[in-house]
Length: 369
Ligand SMILES: *Cc1c(COP(=O)(O)O)cnc(C)c1O
Image 1 (cartoon, rainbow, N blue to C red):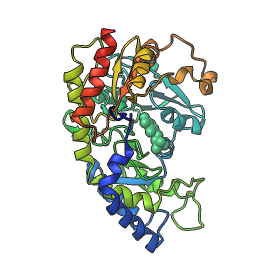
Image 2 (image 1 turned 45 degrees about the horizontal axis):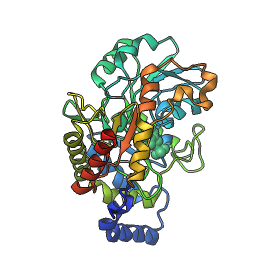
Image 3 (image 1 turned 90 degrees about the vertical axis):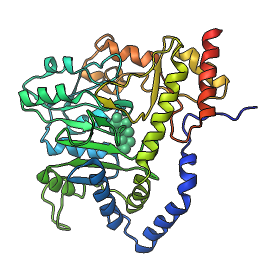
Image 4 (image 1 turned 60 degrees about the horizontal axis):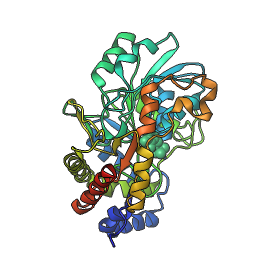
């Protein structure tokens, strides 16, 4: 009997790194720098260099980094931020935490990213920022978005939580907008041993204020310039991320290998396969296929002991928590259809060719039935 193929196998990534990670955690236990501290500072330098940015600040999650990003841009209660309804909900939390309003714009049918052609129509005098997501590891089409931002004097924040190391027109994402936010949730392309996030910017003033906002609004202990937050990265997470960052490019290459192999093997099936746009080098956080019989296919894979997942079954404008925004079914048809048809296949760097073949064979059997 074949071994099950998990949707995600974090243990496979941990195994070869375990000794090194044990050692850096032990060092943190010795020096007791548990909140920020030298390991976080070192990781901030390394991650800024990785992104080609001037500043990277360690946060306790991607969500808190996004929240602070919008605070830095002076988004206020009642303001509007243009974003995508087809993403993990945390993109919109950042807007809601401020009491501002997420204004959704539908996605492109083939990339799942915000459709730049629809953005300008959504701008009002209350619009304060544009917050696109590089979904599933693929950069959104930044040039037309930046053009709109220039024309309307609006800042752009990149939600890069799923796209560490992805490239747009040959250049690393992360410094196209005023600010970019990354997540180090364990399942992300670069994951901590717990929660973590990063705020990346080239702007010195933003970096200085973000440093204060993440630490109770203070630069000098017990003196508070503004109402702040406890959003600090933990020392242990900085240490672990420092070890893992050295492997990120290799892992992203591994994800691309998996994606290209799926592409070859699934080319002659009725599935719609993910499109890598001509401007994008995706890091395949997820490999998401589409088909109207998605639910049946998922059950079929389960019966073959193959894991899969849904990203994202219900777009944000239809979530209960956002009922008060007043959106209804049919407002964003491309997102709604994607939610019904998408299926994420196992995609992690350690997936073997044999496992990929088995996933593909199982899918082919499904369509022959
Ligand atoms: C994971 C994720 C976040 C939130 O990051 P956390 O570290 O889990 O808080 C935000 N946006 C997107 C698109 C994500 O995938």
